[in-house]
Length: 450
Image (cartoon, rainbow, N blue to C red):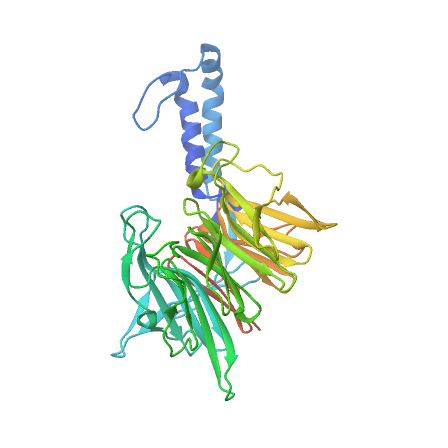
C-alpha cells in the first residue's frame, strides 16, 4: 500500500474552484483594513466602515489562516499500489472498481491508435459493443454543427473499428435554426441496440442513433448501413439537434428530445413533433410501461417566474398525458435557482421518479393516490448531474468533475462514490448483462460484473 495526503476541502469532496474563491475572499478581508476602496483590476477592496475595519485588523488574518489550513494536506489516506503495465483502477468506498479503458481503434491497414473524443453513449450485446460521440461540436447561429463518431467492437472492447462511414451522410442547412449547417453525420448523442430474429431464424442486432442531424436506424448494427428515418433537417419542422431517445416495447414506438422539443414515432407511421420548442432545450426522456405508460422529459421552460426566457430560463419536468398525447409541465412546488436546469429523468418503479440536474440538483417524486409529490434530495455535491441508471435496487447518477453517486433506498438518500475532478465530466452510465460502463469527455470507464 502507498499513502497519500488530503486537505480538509478534499476530505469534504468540495471542488477546487470553491477553495480558490474562498481563499481569495479571505485574503480580501485580511487586507481590507489597509487598502479599503483600492482597485487592483483583478479585484477591488470594499470600502468598509471604520468600525468594521478595526474588527478586520484582528479577524481578517485569523480567517485567512483558517482558509489556508483548509488547503493543507493534513489527512493521510491509503492508496492501492498500481500494477506496472496495467491501467490503474479507481477505487471507491462502495468497492465499485471503475477502471479506465483505453479506446484502441484499428484502421484498415492494421494500425492501432487511441482516441479520446467526447463520448456520449455506449451499448452492448454480449461481447459486441457500440460507442458513439463527437469529434467536434459546434451549433449556434451561423455555425457548423460538427462531426459525430461511431465505433464497433466484437471482442469486449479490446479493439474497436471506426464505422462512422456506415451512417448515411449528406449536407445542408437546418430549417428553423438560423444558418446552421452540417456535412456528414453530426454529433451522435445516444445509441440503442435490440437483437431481433428474422423469419429464417437468424438474429440481427437492430440499431438506433440520435444525432444532431436526425434519428438513424439500421436492421444490422454490425454490418448494415444506418439510414436517417426522420425527415431531412433542412425541411420544416427541422428534425435535428436530438439529445436522447427512449423506446416503447421492442422499439414499437420512440420518443426523441432535443432543441426541436419532443418528437414521437410509431412503427408504420410518421414522425410528429408533439411539443415544439426550438428556442430552448429538452435534454432527457424516459418511458415506463407500455399500454399504461408514463413518459417523462426534462429540460428548460419557455418562461420562468424570474422572467427569464428560453435558454436563460430554469428547468422543468414534463409529463405525457397518455393516450391523449398531451405534454404538461409538472408543478413540483420546489423553487430552482436562476437558470438551473434538469439534465435527466428516470422512473424507477411504479411509485418513484428521479430527476437530476445542474448544481447537484436531485428531485424525487413519489406517487400517492395517483398524485405525484416532489421533494428535494440531498446530493452531497455541487457538480452538475448528467445521467441516471438503475441496476437492481440501486440507483446510479454520474455528473461533471468525475462525480458518481448511488442510492439504495429509491433515491431518498445518496452517497458520493467518487469525486475525482481530474477524471473529467461523465455524460452517461449504462448497465448491461456482463458489464457496466461510464462514458464522458475523453474518458470511458468499465466495471465487469462477477
